[in-house]
Length: 187
Ligand SMILES: CC(C)(COP(=O)(O)OP(=O)(O)OC[C@H]1O[C@@H](n2cnc3c(N)ncnc32)[C@H](O)[C@@H]1OP(=O)(O)O)[C@@H](O)C(=O)NCCC(=O)NCCS
Image (cartoon, rainbow, N blue to C red; front, side, top):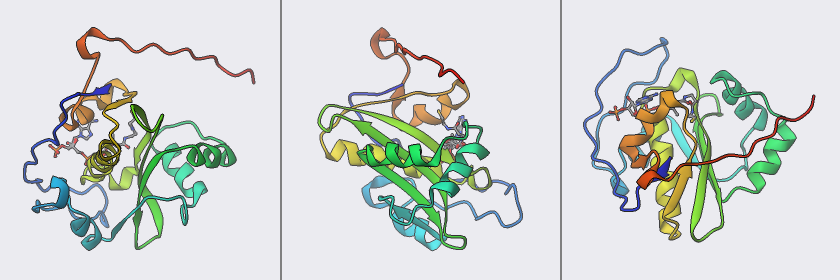
């Protein structure tokens, strides 16, 4: 999916309360007039025990890998994840203060001026549905836009298209189709 050229952050509706999936599930965020018009402000996140982090300092890569695995991504070599993150331009993760563990993550690679691709968008299943995914994507996109990067792409599984669309991403913009060369590694 590609971010629409004429990007504007989507209108935020008040976040409705949803039934938590676990007993200790953090409450859904209430709407607040947010800095940068984010659906959830940094302050709201902090008040719920979530800290936004933009470097890999303090990021436990085994814990991050566990989140990847928990959402169904293949388990990857932690050393390779480290290399990938070192070659990443924009990175954002959300730390849950109580456990000090990453509960949401996204990163973008690119050429630094024109193009970027967003990768590895995940929210720990325990923390899904409370706005963290949107919070992370909004901020990664904003950071890229601040750098003047307006061509922002990502791969979306079909079941997640509805998550990205309200955030400004469109499939096959103007008929342009993505193509991928992929070769499975021999075992
Ligand atoms: C997809 C994912 C990142 C969404 O994160 P999340 O924190 O659960 O989503 P949010 O709570 O921020 O949801 C934001 C909005 O998107 C909607 N939404 C969330 N997941 C959705 C989905 N799969 N399809 C359609 N809409 C979705 C929410 O209802 C919410 O709508 P609202 O703003 O009107 O209330 C998360 O579910 C996840 O990690 N999934 C597994 C990994 C994955 O599929 N990653 C993407 C790879 S392409």
